[in-house]
Amino acid sequence: MKNKELTFVYHLGELRKRLIFTLLAFIIFLFGSFIYVQEIYEWLIRDLNRDLALLGPSEILWVYFMISGVIAIALTIPIAAYQAWLFVKPALTEKERKTTLAYIPGLFTLFITGLSFGYFVVYPIVLNFLLSLAKGQFETMFTAEKYSKFMINLTLPFGILFEIPLIVMFLTSIGIINPLLLSKARKMSYFLLTLIAIFITPPDIISDILVIVPLFVLYEFSITLSKIVYRKKIKNQSDDNIFPLKKTS
Image (cartoon, rainbow, N blue to C red; front, side, top):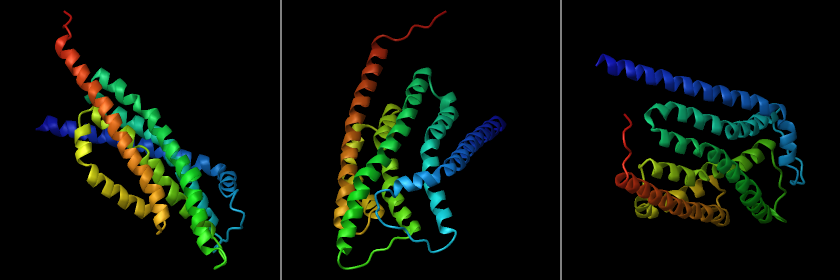
């Protein structure tokens, strides 16, 4: 019993250390990106063709921290993934260590890809559609805070949701899920993805469709990847049974 308590305390201390490293990395990236946030902000609003209003002297500071926070999250993802890998590393075999470590660059790449898709594809379509509804009817004026929140709320979820295929591959490789389970859960998954799309988009059907369709495609793509990983895993297990490793004396 005492050994179990010591083991639990050790793992708790190890987890705490990994979380501290991740938090420190996020803080460093946050303040590092804040140095260049003004240039980044000007680039983000380059095509807006209108001035943004400030309702208070501290509002622009809040906007800068929101933008810096998104950049810091993106840069912290590989650090956080590596720290998580170090935490579970002792429980993995040598083959599992190499396999799981290979997923880390993909997490960062998919997050950036998702952000890019949200910003360059979905965001301008939704913004232009909403502006077209107000054209000739209302005088539109944006505040820096509301505009930045709108942009981030529409792009950041895609960075997270684009991680789905890689997460599915990882969970399949360690045996937690399989393609059959994903196929059976398709209806429920579609329902949940639809709720997510409605929650993160403005309240209009066009915006919802523009987000729902890519999410469904991502899910189906994840099932395909899961099948590939699952078949490879079954094949490797069959090979190991046919040609078991001999112990070296």
